[in-house]
Image (tube, rainbow over all chains, first blue to last red; front, top):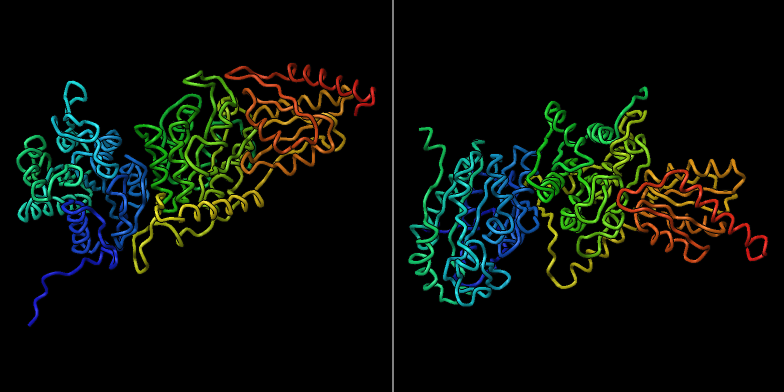
Length: 251
Length: 360
């Protein structure tokens, strides 16, 4: 007797092969999102909003309706969609360059308004698609193409802690940071995404999940080294945790 | 419905509601804040959406969100605020997202001032956004026309899946005059063929402005320009006044058009053959029509509250058929009937002298 061990999510296109670099975190997160949309039977009611960066090509992977947004404006597009179609499931998929750098004002105001949308922000602490420049979340000391000697705080300041700041907004119902470093943590990440989906489905407020993910190509590391770097270095600056969960607070 | 005394900005807001606008997203800026104030007071009562966004960037991108679902949505702003929206206009044109933008021009460049001006013709027509794209731009000259063109803006946005700008100026926004709100006269197309609503028993759709595969963006741009040609063919509108025997033709858009009209009447009383050609659609610009007018005229005088912006389109349309003069004042300087009349007298005398000398 055969046992089904893997089923490709319906919410992924049959021929939508991921085009990410080896060791990149995007594919893992996109698949988890697709699995959750299937699990909640949301495919027919979902509108996904892509952003600019490696997070851009959602329509190449998802079997979902997709609206494209300009750099940093995904949460605005999502707001416009959700406000006129409140019965739809609306999520944005952004990177740290998009949601925490050029679009952080929009992220914060969307949180403050308590928009009933879900934002997934992949944080790989650099602008991946453009070749690895420093972003707002880049660690002090991190070598990027624009900080070849390492990010110096006295020159370019300190990394922005998105999930913690979003948690401070009154309209935020849920804000968490997860890291997809191993199977156990990937499962935890999926739990956080699941929670962020449920928050929207129950109309409880803005839900934000920051996912620490590796960018081996631009970090100039082997995939396994990049995972170690995340555990030993990135997480000391951007710690994983749930920074707000109104469903827990009300219990 | 009887005429009532109504302020330009409020008239635009009320017309938008009557046109079926479901969402307003905006950010305050003088001289158009009354539009947002009216929407804020009235849309929620109707169960519709009003958001004061964190910036003009956010406003127009919220309009995009609503537009991707086929919902009638608008924003309004002025000069420097419209400057911030340019990236989104380009993206909307590329992705074919409908939306209505009201631009109530103030003095510029920079923060400029809050006086009426027409310095944003280039901004609306020649774009600050990237790439080959065109907004449909409508130019009202009085409050009644602002109402009627607001209706038309919402219809054209859906008909062509393109952003439509109502280009007004601070005079129109702030003045009160009698006008009436007729019924919305258009039948809008069905949006269900393209709007995002979730992939329910149909293939997934996307509305995006990135087209990377080789040749795809060229093909798309060609498709967009075929659409713009159809817009030009079907939607070009303009006003002609006293043109039949006019030797001197005034060209003007928006509120300057009505001042020019008063000057035409005065010049006719003084025995001068002067007429007016006023584009109502700035894109599509009535270039062929203006060219025909120019062929029968001895001279064109273009009047604008700027340093000569529509002038380029006027010259391009006239294409040498007759000489084109310009008279304008920028950044809050107004053209009064007396000032224009004086200029008309001066130019008309030159034409008369030339006629007498047998030059024309």
